Length: 365
Image (tube, rainbow, N blue to C red):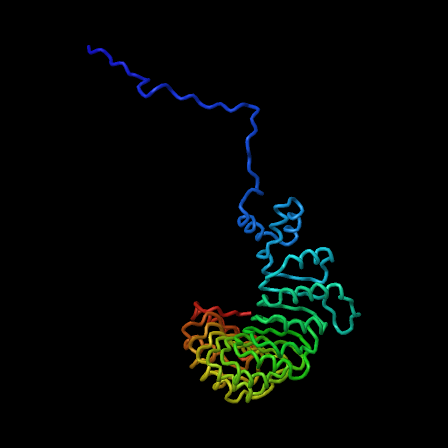
């Protein structure tokens, strides 16, 4: 029997001793305030304004972070914010891209409410930051001085006015807009039309339930001055004439057209839809709601020429199932077709069409 070889456990030197930490030694723990400034800013971007304000009171580090202008790219000022909060908030914003100003809603019968304190902070924000703002929404404003300050926004791209009333003189001096949305506003005569005409790069236009807005004049101005138009939405009080609607056929880049009846569709469409179909063959979305004078024959040119249509809303028209089936057969990209409230289209006919073209969303009620 061969003798067992002894293993040398010490060929690599003596074993290392483990360092012992005294029990009473304090462990150095890092807290969140030691994170890099940029990381703290990114964390704060996930907080709402109230939470940012609370954090600002916790320590000097958080207070400094709360003042970073990148936290206030989308700014909302509301009439019911308290004075102390507004004062602190407005002092922190410097380069916002979006600004929303909300006044309290009041109808013509409501008592006048004093917003002078709130006006002061809105005025500071527009004067201080106007040149950086690219998108503005103002709700329920009746103060002409505030709306005149829109002229300070020399780089403004998107403007939304909701339930505002003013002379709106500043609107005619703005020429940089690509998107306009006016809803339930009270304009002086001609102002809205002039404001739209002066923005040659306009791409989106949304008009609904305004006072003193002449959609016939606007249609004709759009066809002459706004060749880049891609989206139009009309739901106005003024009756839209076929002659004016016909001019929209010159907008060859148009992708979305919505004509929603308020009191405005009581005329014969004549060949207006045919002219639109010929000029706007790249339409992808068409809404014609409540125009009872439109029948199958009026609609056929659209269905045959605008083969890029993906959404079709024809509620309340005087069409039959013939137009519905033709749309399903002629439009290869069609995803949605709504013909509810078309009295000449029976629900049973729609159900059969829905069964035949399951790839198209066709509401039955």
